[in-house]
Length: 203
Image (cartoon, rainbow, N blue to C red; front, side, top):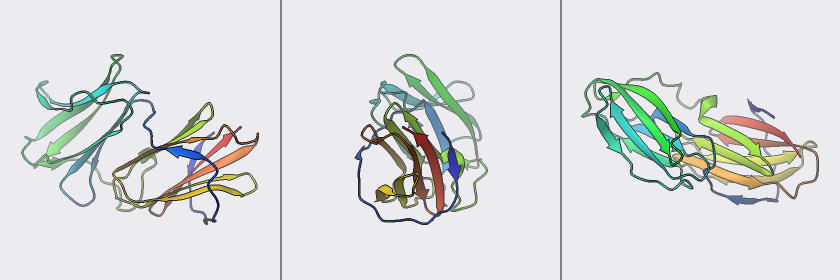
């Protein structure tokens, strides 16, 4: 099973799955510039259904921000204005109830996130996660460019089993129950803007 990025044509099809928004994934924290603004988007995907919290600390360990307790069924996403922060390095930390900790560091310079920005409109592979467990396929996307999105699932013969358009949101998370599918090979195609990410799985 793998995820690959590429362009393909879209076909119309009928929905054949039960879809619900969810946030079930390994712990992950992202710090991204938001569109062409001076704001920074911080997103965190919790560990399973654990209760968790998100915090930002400075170099000396001083607490800059704390989210408080968040339900593990929710993806955390928040825009920050760092214009009043001093230049330096900071750490975003996701801490779960089970004491698992996931963190990433970032730098602030001249009141803004100091990071390389991908070419506008090109979605980096790390912004999209597609994986499966048992009879469920998960999709998680940090939509830094505010793109409209699409999801399509088809079988090995190109028959479209599910096709849906999703309006632009800061983050997108969903799970697809594929328990009723017959044995075979399938492809999940996720589109953000002009970029397509394909994930193959077998039943």
